[in-house]
Length: 440
Ligand SMILES: Cc1ncc(COP(=O)(O)O)c(C=O)c1O
Image 1 (cartoon, rainbow, N blue to C red):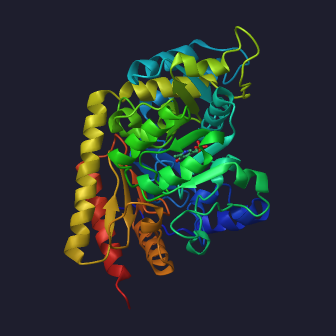
Image 2: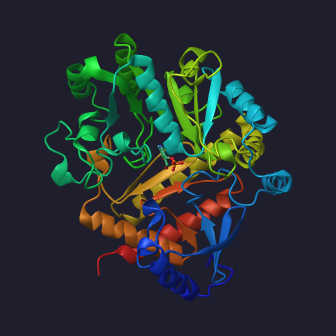
Image 3: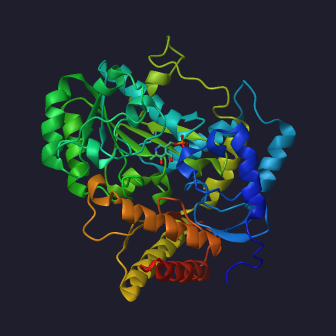
């Protein structure tokens, strides 16, 4: 048994009841909603978190992949405590902002300049505004099923259900009722990894297209890698047509020392990234060459893109980010990614051994469990049937009850304090969970 203590979850259940009266559904983040109630955490240390009932859980959520060092890394905690005693945010800039920018520009070959935001969603929003300012066009193309945060245009056709997909040519599907028609009209949805159909769709819109946004391994789409052919096509197509290519690496910047696009072998015009670069504090950033980044430059004239934010580049996020990223040396990435290989192999072997339907996708320190068969190349392939969704929910629930926290979508993210023993524990618990799933 993984748990050093197993006290039940009575306090979490009670906390959720309390939460329900003051938070809609007792929830703040739709993405982490769990029925009948989530567990409420009291603290974390390294690879583990402790809930308010005193249970210890191995944390593979790591705040939706943001916590690459797990919890309460001693140096990050010290740096944050020190900064808190000096002041948590100012209107004026601090030296930490320059330090983190220098660190990032030294890592990613095409980053000449960066601009900080509070979240990944804001980074995507800023990248899109920059693309529109640079091209004087307004439409944005994105892949069906890809999540790029909570900015209106990129919410189109994220999480769209099969009955709304349309033919193999993806329909534009609003995420919310009340989404203005004008938002739907400014988005071009293309099928991930399908060069021919994407080209056909883009060709029809190219005259008004400001940007194509692509995540080279979109988690919500299935944590499936974009093919080399697809990325090469998008890069060449956008360059030839003077369209801005935005790489969304908010989640996948975790894949490698020089970021995801460099690992995948392409250079976008703009990169939107975030999560791990704040050491656990809220953050986002936009990076690229000077010629592109100059749209944000207020020093010569009124900038093409006015983009502020009360908490952008606050010293807590900057300081936390500097410490966290300094620990992420190339060697640290190599070790963590090898642990990721170990985990994916072990999960794949588990499916083989148990003879249960399922597979694992991902790369680097990320994995996602799918309780389905067949090759997964795009959103539609990976979309779970109602039965598969229910089985996944049961799997994640069973794992949680036995001391392993996974994201509700079956996504897992490793952290540097983890070892092969931790992964073995997780795989053991998943094995039990798979057995428990066997049809009654
Ligand atoms: C690929 C991707 N883009 C954008 C975002 C939005 O980032 P944030 O939640 O920091 O706003 C996320 C968050 O999960 C993401 O995974």
